[in-house]
Image 1: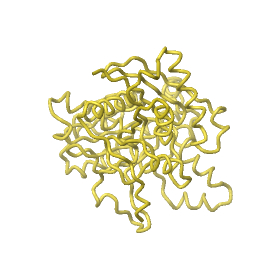
Image 2 (image 1 turned 30 degrees about the vertical axis):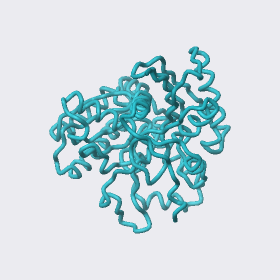
Image 3 (image 1 turned 120 degrees about the vertical axis):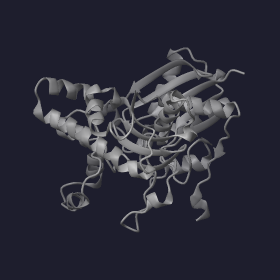
Image 4 (image 1 turned 135 degrees about the vertical axis):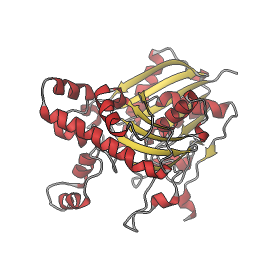
Length: 360
């Protein structure tokens, strides 16, 4: 039986969609949302109708009859107390993703949009390898502040997909290998994969700064800024995510533009770009001991991994630690569709999401 799957991946400034028949890509498209367009919305969840309408228009443009779809899979959002793999979109999940206390992230819209399109068609909506999937070792969750427990937030979907691909290329299975994966995108995360599980991770707000995120900053400086009276809570959140990192220094989050600045002799651009590579390398090194030094490969992936300048600088720092595999691009639509296909073919089973807070 042939399955036709719609994959939906909402990001901070775009919504990527793809339609697949089996493992064959029929089309993909990235719908860009301008700063002016996004400024109209106070919360990410308020963007729901706009993004859904863009998706339906794109499907119509490409001649896709939604009645032929077998399932719809969305990028998993900021859910907690779940593990990697597939989940059915449930009422509990939708309530959790729209809860004002849930961390705001564009990925939260993945399940909501998938369900909204799937329900009238009578087909199933899934998420797969959600951002908040938790396979971390308990020791990795302990912080120096008892009130704060570390959560597993990283680019789970693409990191696992690239780890599976790397293992296949090495003639092994994902469950046989140990990897350090650095996902280099608008946000940067680094994860340690041990025998098929992400056992520790450095999140986008806890490690290297990225094109538009500040990364980890000494807390006393941040506390002083928060209580200075100069910045609102919203201002500080923007400094951490959206207006931080490379964008804060150089006014752009485009690596292409930054490389052009460097070629034109801009010393600040060179310093900031090199510092980003330096911090990424430090993040990779930080996770090597988690795997007790037994690392089969270090994988550099994500859209920013297309920058040969940046990846070369990273290699100079970490090439002696393990073999380096550069696998650029996000590949998340393909990974979403492949996960849903495995579920539809009975190779994996999707769980029903139940909000753990009901039992508290």
